[in-house]
Length: 317
Image (cartoon, rainbow, N blue to C red):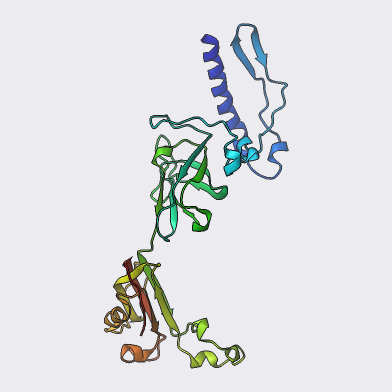
C-alpha cells in the first residue's frame, strides 16, 4: 500500500509538472512532434525492487482516441466495444465514453439534446457528429474553487430530424471533465417568439420580381417591401407584443417606439396576423392610414408570440 501511495503522489506531481512545463504550448500544428513532455530527472519510487528512472525516456503526445479510431460512435462498430452498465449513483468520471438509446420526440418540431448536466466533450447521434459541447464557461475575473458555469452557457444542441428514426437512436458521448449522464434529456423545441424589422428602403420580396425586373434598375421603386411573419408548423400567432411603423428603436424583445410612430400600428398588425399561421404586411404609408412623419424613411418593427394550434391560415395586410 505504501508503494501505491508513493506512486500516486509521483503521478500527481508529474501531472502538475506537465501542466506547468508545457501548458504554454499545448496546441498548434505538429504538436505531437514538438518538444513533448518535460526536461529533468523523473523517478518512480516505492517499489520493492527499487526505483524506475524515466529521465531518459522519450515523451510524446497521443493524437486522437482509440474509440475514435475504432468508430465506436457508429451503430455497427458500437456493438464491438466493451461497454459496462452504469448505475445512477456512479461518481462523475473524466475521459469516459457513454452510450445510450432514445426514441425521437413526436411531431415535427426541432429536436434538441440537453447536455446541461455534462461538462465538456463530443457527441454523436446515429453516427453523425453533433460537434463539441462545452457547457462550462469561466468567469471574467478568473476562478479558484468555483463552478465554471457562467451566466451565459450553451446546454442545448440541435439534432436534425433527418438523422433520427422513430426509436432506438444511438447517442454516444465522450466526456472529458465529468458529468451526470442520467440527467441528459432529448426535447422538441418550438419557436415561441418571432420578430421582424423591415423598412421602406428594403428590397421587395424576391417572389414579387419577374425576370425583366433584374434588368430594369427602376423596378425596385415600383414594388413595395413586405414583412413576412410565420410560426412553426402547427403553431399560430397568438398575440402581437409590439408593433410600430415609424422609427422604432432596439432589437427583438427589446423594441421601443421612436419619435415617429403610427398610433394604429399595433391594432392593424394584430388584425392582420393574430390567429394566423403566417401573415404578410406591406411596408406602405397607406397601409397605416397615412405618412406618420414626412421626409423620413419609415420602418416597421414587430414582435409576435406563437402558440400550438390545430389549424393554421395565412393573411395579408
